[in-house]
Amino acid sequence: MTPLAQTLASLESSHSLTHHLAPALARDVVRFPNGLPGFETCRGFLLMASEALGPLQCMKSTEGPEASFLVVDPRRVLADYRCELSVSDRHRLGVADGADTQGLLWLVLVTIELDGTITANLRAPVVINPERMIGQQVVPYQCVYPIRYVVASGE
Image (cartoon, rainbow, N blue to C red; front, side, top):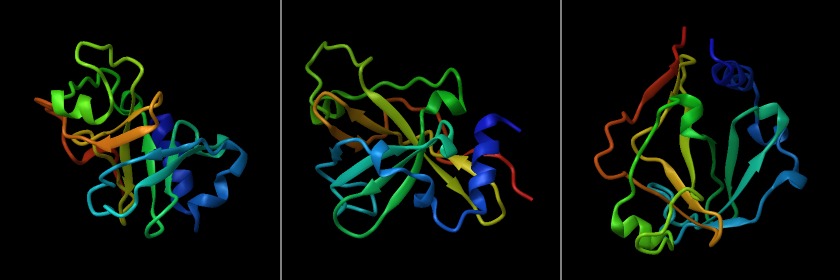
């Protein structure tokens, strides 16, 4: 079992993910002008980390309905993960034409299914511009990755 899968498996039995998160580790609010699909009224999120979560982070809404999501750098799931942003996605994130995108933070949503299967949505990552504190979930240009990439099989 990979270190990421071990961390997720240990969290699976937790009743509340938020008890692993220390408020002192919360970063500034990241604005999602259009929210996230299915959570369009959630426009602000804190990105939080904890030693108990290992490489995982938690995105917790600061407005709208209560929502929180496990996220991880996609290269922790698939070492050679690569995607390209469209021109319109670059503009929405405040990245100038021709500007380097290396400073962007790429995260994928992680799900623990009822049978214990752990999946990552590699098709539609969340991309954050930390300089502007703006984020959005995107479907990158010519993305070949699946929505449900199995990180670890359940029962």
